Image 1 (cartoon, rainbow, N blue to C red):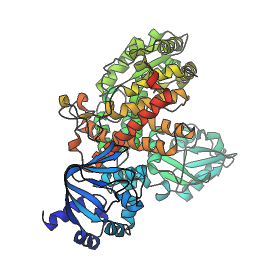
Image 2 (cartoon, rainbow, N blue to C red; image 1 turned 45 degrees about the vertical axis):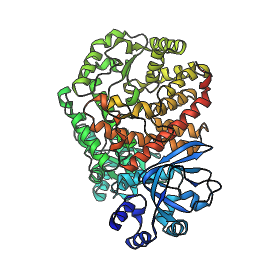
Image 3 (cartoon, rainbow, N blue to C red; image 1 turned 30 degrees about the vertical axis):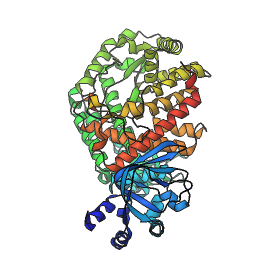
Image 4 (tube, helix red, strand yellow; image 1 turned 180 degrees about the vertical axis):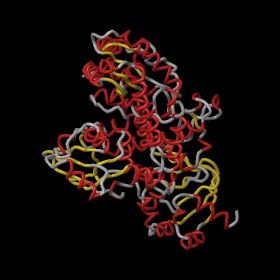
Length: 604
């Protein structure tokens, strides 16, 4: 290998590409190439580390208490900690004849004067995991993750007291060049838009000498100036508004315009919102799935975290459900039922469409059959606009998932008592329920009933929790990926990692009567209640985010739904493979936590 090739190899290994050209030149002069035969003990408690090793060929096992903790192969490096802290609890043994680069201890410690390398090698798991993800995502990541409302230009806010006349309010609005009027009525704020003035003054006949408070009806929707811009986008999308009132320490400081925000993000989500809002029939919604997919691809390319993409897509999907609900259900019946979505849709974790899980809760005393035709039509419309059919038939078109409140309570009781595989699966789906149209109070009543039924029922909860052990995590004792030959040497991300985390957290949420349905929000609440510590909670969130990110790419690349959960680790970049391995290790750590917490080793 030439000196140029050696330099390129070192540069390709993170974080050495952070070195300046001069620093890299000096390093290359000090690097040695070494050979160690199989079974050589390189580092242990009794053998101090003499160098930082970068493997060219061969492999090395790291053992803790004589159990394999990790395996390093071509392109991997070890062990910075042994050099920095001067001690090592592990043993590093050559598995296969080793050819490697060596950076001697003193030279490596000199490199630690570089603050970027120092910060990388001194990080804990969580920070290093985040660092690797940011590095993998590239430079476009920063604007989406750290930009705040304070970074934007804010338009003047026209705030008037409720007893000022409409005329004087309009004069002030003109002078301030503001697009809206904010009315202060005893420290309660309302907003008046151009539409309000048209409907109530020009067409409604209100006298401009009247006080502005007489035509103010809509309360303002605000966001704090320190909040993230992406959250502002979510609020605007969810509420279908074009302007947000910005506050600082509770005081109004300006107006954030949708046009400015969208120009900053350039993701065209507002076009999808407009399509949904203006849709008159199902044909107007048929092209939305293509637009949503393009939106996902755009956001992913810009480095937006998957959790934010799924929140935005879920918000848009909820608008679609609401629009179809209004198309299909007679107006006088809409407040007598609740349309709910479940599974990944209910958790707000679905991006690319996999399938649909939905149900209808009908108010007691109302004939469920009144909704039969409308729900069959709604399901037909969902299929037409690109929502795939649920293989398990968990859809409103199935009468099993159309019930009144009392019937759902009986169903919940049956889930609680039978605990067979079918019951656990149906219960798990329902535990993620979210109301998207109709009377949300009907779902609230059932959630309260569900949680009450499981109060202090740790024996039953353990039977639900044991499903986290249904699938093996696809990583071996030697830290290699366990692949499935029948799926072209790929592994199943959903079964192998995501399911155990989602289901385990869901079960803990049921045990502690947590209202949130989103996995990350549930983890945060478990931490808030002291069930898991902050470091473990962050590890779980970072691992879930990594798995979801890799899965999203697989779903976008997949030709059909059956293959959308499978990835070939060899097709991943090295950093992504490292993230995946780390994530699987945290999944195994979480499984051990679940076994201990619910005593799963005692559950038959």
